[in-house]
Length: 238
Image (cartoon, rainbow, N blue to C red; front, side, top):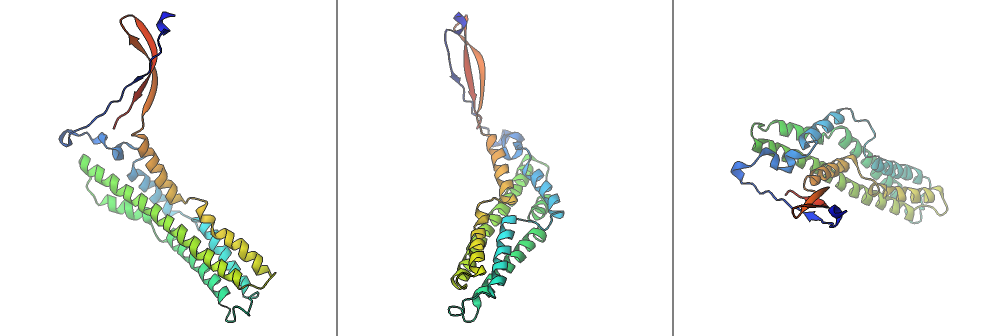
């Protein structure tokens, strides 16, 4: 048919630049994203109140493995290289310390509640006030993710170091030598899994990024006075 003689791809890029004096409240991605950062913080603050003992499990498993390896090594130390039996003590202290740190962070450190309290103290009348509240909430979400990432790397470095040290001072062909190898592998577990705090920050950033994303739709466009052709409309707002 003559109507489909032509195939046309029409790209329409519409850009909107607003003046600060006339700017709409909805011209900021922080105010368009759903859920809002403040809503996300509020939801997570509620979950903090009912959080169980399992928190950042990959780090907990690593800590338990190191602690167990340390306790086991007390009876399998190569006394020719570790006369003072420091290796099992190091493993025990490192493992127990990380269990304690994980418990404190999971049960006592209320990162989202602290952010929510900070947001509540801010005014909420104008678009500027709302924008500030959302950005403070985003900072809190990102702060929790950064803390979690630092904890992961510190956990890996300390637990791996402790297990490597124990392996070098364990009796040959002993149970400890095998268990230390398993515990050393478990020490790298936190790098394989993301934490809840990291996932929340990634999701919020992903939802916010979609606001800038292009929208591609198909349509029929007029070509000349009498002919029509199928086309694609590419719309982007930034």
